Image (cartoon, rainbow, N blue to C red):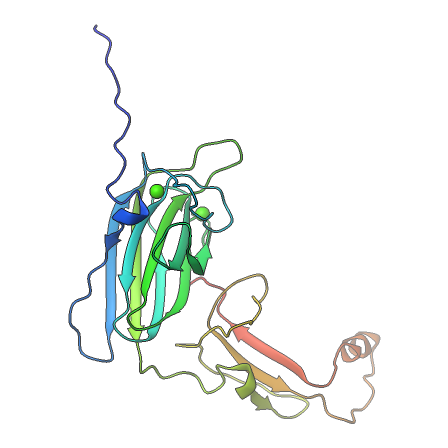
Amino acid sequence: MSPQLLAAPLPPANDHFTNRMVIAMPNLAVPIVFTNQSVGWNTGATKEPGEPEHAFNAGGKSVWWSWTAPTDGDVRLTTDESTFDTLLGVYTGSAVSQLTLVGHNDDHREARTSRVRFRARAGIACQIAVDGYANPGTEADSGNLKLFLTFLGEPLARPPNDHFTNATAVIGQFAAVGGSNVNATHETGEPDHAGESGKTSIWWAWTAPARASAPASAAARASAARVIPQILIQIGTAGRS
Ligand SMILES: [Ca+2]
Ligand SMILES: [Ca+2]
């Protein structure tokens, strides 16, 4: 049998930032709801000089897309259903070495795919990188990828207690509350909750009653000791939607 030469895989067409694929927007009525699925691969892709590390990982096999929001609105990007351990980065800017981070993520599921939520501004191009996770000293992971984009344009109905300053007051020693975090947002400077970057938090504020009878049991007294005035209780998604 004659020896066969195995050719290295050709880099994908959108390997370099300057060759990023544009996700086209059709003309849609306001408020705009838009979904898009892009497919591709990063096998044979490279990392360019000055390119940032996506989601704090060295990566090494990035491919690029560009998408411009027609109005302000909410964006959700995922690499779910990709066949490898992805990194996802979203930026603004026009040079690979001078990008401003919008959001990035390594894993949001056990499958090691990625998800980023962010607020888009009308007419501002979002530069989207999908890379493969690289363990130290190893090549970046690679394979076939899917990039899902969901855009909900303004005007959007927000929960009344979306913002910290609009926390809904909870009254009384015993209370049960409900609400919805659909279309809720993550404010500038807001921390991650329980280690998750859910991005869709809503807020309540509860003040412990000034006078309360002493709990009878030791366990109840210990619980009461942890109650301090002006505790702000929040709930938000854990990023599993
Ligand atoms: Ca690249
Ligand atoms: Ca990952």
